[in-house]
Image (cartoon, rainbow, N blue to C red; front, side, top):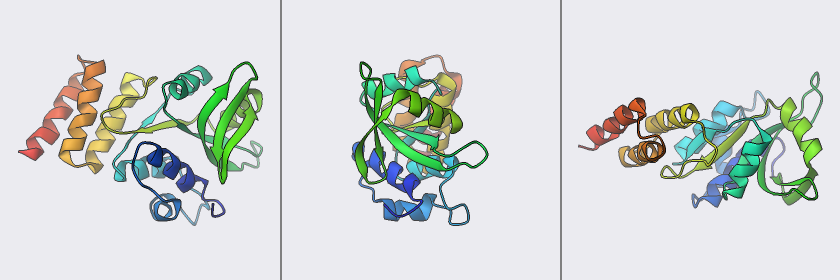
Length: 195
């Protein structure tokens, strides 16, 4: 991994996991900000959308993170590996856990399987604002998504996706929350655009 390119590397990992071929070097043009020497969360979300995936913010709770991984969805997390007053931001992908040993399994940088104590992760993740992101195909909702976050993700995806794929995101949302009026209206947009 190129120095400070943990954002593009993490995004490539989760995109490849869902069958979207992605290389960190190519994603860097879309998500890496040289002036910041890193990637902002909005760039990560937008980068996933432009590649054809729905990027959904997850609840910032360890239990939700573990449930998402148990559902088979790797999760991008933002950690602060430094101090509050001297941050060292880092994106990694949570791919597994071992509760009896109190460890998480991360893909981080060039390390395919990094074991980290849960307690250490909780501290670094808290300093990163408990930021977690699921990157999934439009027909798949995160197991732990809240309705408002899933709707925000679908609305954002609609702006970047072809109408047929945007419709899939709304259909998935309506399958879980059939009374969501905004999702129903949102579904009409791509259907109208498709003719």
